Image 1 (cartoon, helix red, strand yellow):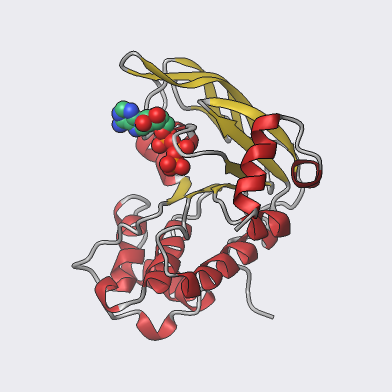
Image 2 (cartoon, helix red, strand yellow):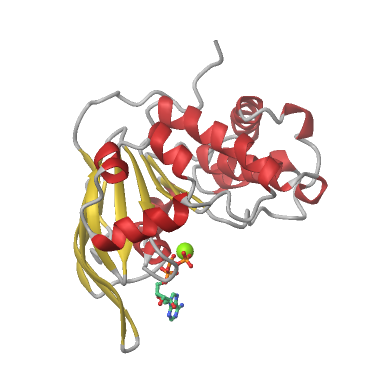
Length: 258
Ligand SMILES: Nc1ncnc2c1ncn2[C@@H]1O[C@H](COP(=O)(O)OP(=O)(O)OP(=O)(O)O)[C@@H](O)[C@H]1O
Ligand SMILES: [Mg+2]
């Protein structure tokens, strides 16, 4: 038995962790999100998929306020993202984000990558942050690499460090944007394994991915986007077995053909 990757969250405690209500966003004249609504319940894993340019990354960036949006409302664990009174750095500290490119600090050791934000943002002591960092490294299988620099690790290892770094902030939700799509194929599995474990520990997750095996294994629901709209938002089995829209059917047949 390994210890869980996260501090325990009340399993199936209910309650909406992320509420996305009628969100629209424009880049200049171009509307990239159109009336998007969905919700993620505490402990739920939602996979977001859809063609390139459909707005998946933009939607995720709106959730942790990396991008502004012009209409609608997003609420994360009771905090309104667009509210002027919202302390955005504090909100972002509670939302873990893992991107396609790991964006680790290249000049810092792996361990220092994990302890920097908890010390600076959460005010943790060096000893406390170090202990938590080492625990997390153990759980993503990288204890032996704590004192290396990111450049000395493989892509899969770096992405596991990036996940551990996000977890070091004790986020209430984790957002992933194609975390495996830049990796060599033989490294995809080790990163997905960490994500599967995280899902099973009860972490609330929104995951943009085309890894349909992962989606089948751990997703509760699938959100399918096309041209800035949420076209389907259904239970996993319904999405894979009986996609309703023609656009989702076409997308699935293309992606599953490989
Ligand atoms: N900074 C930006 N300025 C202008 N347009 C942008 C910007 N970022 C994204 N877009 C446009 O917004 C739309 C949605 O892009 P987004 O990156 O969210 O799509 P995506 O579904 O994540 O695609 P992909 O699968 O290729 O990652 C696209 O038409 C894109 O060209
Ligand atoms: Mg994207």
